[in-house]
Image (cartoon, rainbow, N blue to C red):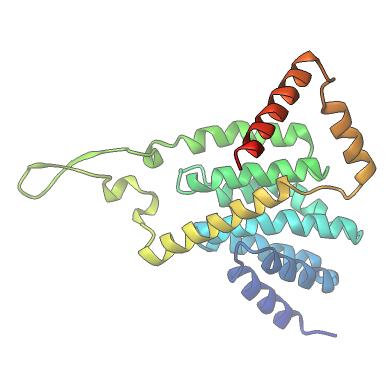
Length: 239
């Protein structure tokens, strides 16, 4: 039997090192399901790391939660799913805090909540209630684009910029964190575009859909075809 402390530490490390890649999330999800007999302890790890790590890592963990719940459902280990349903408000509060410090994460929270609703892990009512609260966090005055706050320097002259006190906890991300956030946002957007083009592989249904969406042939179509044919003949005669 695996040492519970070691399992917890390894899972914590995986959560701390989550990236925007699918493989990273799947690795952590499979690890948690491998030690499902410790589900309550590992679930508490997720909540703890959500409240400790950087905002970028919290965004990655939000996407991990979606994949984790989906995988747990497929493997029929529903306790993980039920615990996440129970604590979803705590998760959202950690990823996009009410103080506005996670305003950049609001769009990611919405995407994941939408995915969890589509997968029938969260109800439409729950998602709607959470989304109503997210609107205020997204428009938090301390994080509006282009915000300029006035303050004064030691000489009493006004200077412009966002004062340190206006930022939650007085913290600003360093250059490395900003660059990492930009790169991982690119990866997340890439994954989103890929998911939009995903098809179920049923060629018959796809063919039927295209057939239904195609309009009937009209007189304009014949005229256009005739004109195109004449233009091709004209170009061929010039060669």
